[in-house]
Image (cartoon, rainbow, N blue to C red; front, top):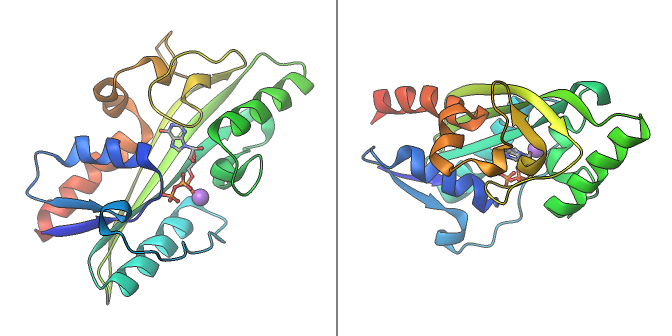
Length: 197
Ligand code: ITT
Ligand code: NA
């Protein structure tokens, strides 16, 4: 089966391809498709709403089954920020570096060098005509104010998973996928996907 993974985030594409490589599914990214669709507005107040909006939007327009994912970092001492705003924390087209700098600044403004935090991920699978299924995963840990490592993407240089001393950006893609929010959500997703293949 051909499935489109509707994301503009190449870090997500790498992780999903790695995790789905044993399945008989061809994961096509938006980049491979070479279609220029305006991305949908992410107006949801929850990760699930946003993942659902992205999946149904692209499935209808591409007339193909679509996987979409919405995820983010929830920082306890910042009242749950950046949350659903993780990708646009420092502004609409903010880079990872700008988002990370803002996170560090906000923690330091509170006189903190770390805070408990978690990453959350929601996947939605949608057919062109009907909704398919969804799954979720999370990983608890903490954020720090001294970035380390060059793997992963986004906030990974600032996130240390529970039970680890390395940041997520210091892990290999296999290690990250074994413990990450996206890896866990994908494991459930794969079981549901197998049922419809
Ligand atoms: P698409 O909507 O096109 O899929 P996006 O990056 O805009 O890509 P989201 O709206 O789901 O995706 O925002 C997710 C953001 O949360 C992402 O840009 C990172 O800032 C952060 N994030 C999510 N998962 C992460 C991970 O595994 N490592 C580091 N940061 C992550
Ligand atoms: Na989002």
